[in-house]
Amino acid sequence: MSDLKDKVQIAGRFRRSVNISADIGDHAALEGFVCPRSSQQLLDQMANHVSKTNQGAFTWTGPYGSGKSSLAVALAGVLCGKEKVRKTNSEFIGKDFAESLWEQLPPKSKGWKVIPVIGRRADPVAT
Image (cartoon, rainbow, N blue to C red):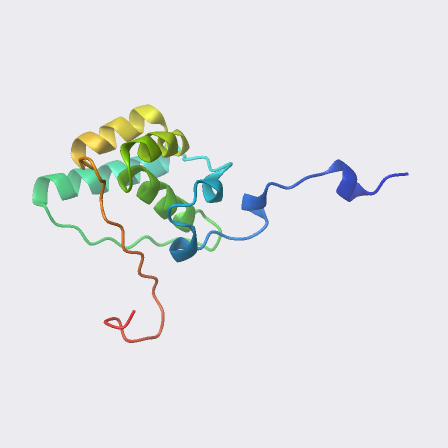
């Protein structure tokens, strides 16, 4: 008789929660990520706001495990880095939707610079 561990395999992405500062730029961190339409709408509204006003500060709130960090890593994946990497990462949010984001927030040749800052009880300047 074989053990359950021999029959069931869990993708590495589901063994731990996404860590924004550690996982930005790691394609493997998003394996299995599914971007729901509601998340696409959120990103579209944000991109639209930034493209029209050239300003943006946003707070994402939601229960633990709802996908906020995964969405942040996916957004960074399609906006930062080289074009080839951005196009590969676009599969996580939908290639057509990524094209729409790129129109509103053009990444140009080198992409956006993403600086992950995670809220914590510390001096924000030092963080």
